[in-house]
Length: 528
Picture 1 (spheres, rainbow, N blue to C red):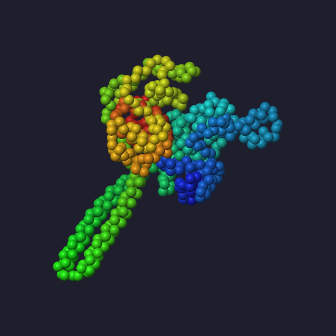
Picture 2: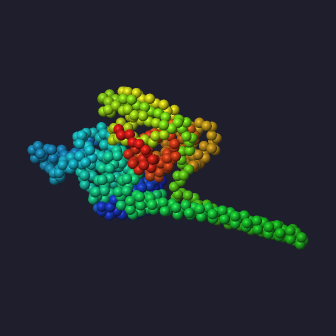
Picture 3: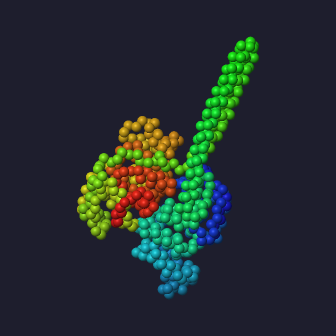
């Protein structure tokens, strides 16, 4: 179905991204492509879809792929029918049914007499029946746009499907629809996703790394088991290599000490024996040369061991140091922080919610806010964070501090450098080297400190924000996470999870990623 041979890609700035990629997907196989942000997953899909040109290698397919990109806003100028490339067929069918005998209509329809029926069936499955085919895409939400393109799977019935983060804007119910469809489908899939529920529907996992493409049979859970075994083996190699380095340093000291003793003994003996000065100088230079040669040999050995150690460290996922080490909130457990009474909001077209909200949130709660696309989850968060006032009812807020982490990490200032951003959160007078220690713990090394925040990936921004919260030292009364995993790779999601799990205050989360919610030990759900 799909064959890739020696594929390589070079960025327009002439920086190579990957090379030598070889892979094969047989018909009806379901494959997931995973890897860190920036490694080239989306680029690989675009190459297969024909949207980019490879620098080297070949791609062979038995049929054209149906490709849904990660961002679909670029199609906003089109109607639904135009975006799905069915506008001409639907118009031709309508004209023919109304009595037209124009030959062009028959050419446009191309004997596809069931096109309208398939569109209706697809829109019914994806819950889009309230939209007309002539509706502009710009009037739809992000999740609705994604479902429009997913409906194309049923309308066009392609043999090969390429999906780039298809669950990013889907609500929980729509995610389940997608998982059911993929599970039951006979089509061939290559899917880029961080949704672990969807990844567990896959039959094979491809991991794209800077060193190439690794393939694992089985679903994501099996892949994680294999990765864990690999990381445990690497951890043991790390331990062994560190032992080798310590032993090499000890051997170096002992060898140099022995050589120095021999040189000293030789000097005393030669001086006592009345050897001429010119000969003494020659012997001394010879001894010093031996010592220097010995040091060089040991230096080369140590350097090689250190390089091997660094290579092992680069392969290990470092998460233990990236936790929120904050003092507990000064508010007592169970204190009422938020109380809503007959709460509602209007954008000028009537109230957003059919019924007014009455609820309270207490200190120490871990709560997930759930609801479909367009149900008003973000509006509720804007009310809680006082960005907008309620239209109806009242909202009693008794917290002192709140941290709001959204999917764009907008707490960060793109105009600042990494160090400048960290320094902005330094409220306790940490010294420069102390800030640098924090940055290093969150994997920002000296080469990164002057990098602009605008150049950071989603995962890097998340790590920097967690680092800044740690530098601030004072625990917020509430942390709000608003779809924080949408732009993260799986490793970054796991880092975020481990960091937030250590937080002892009140946690409000909006997320359709059920695995993420379970890993955060969410205790209660608020349904919109």
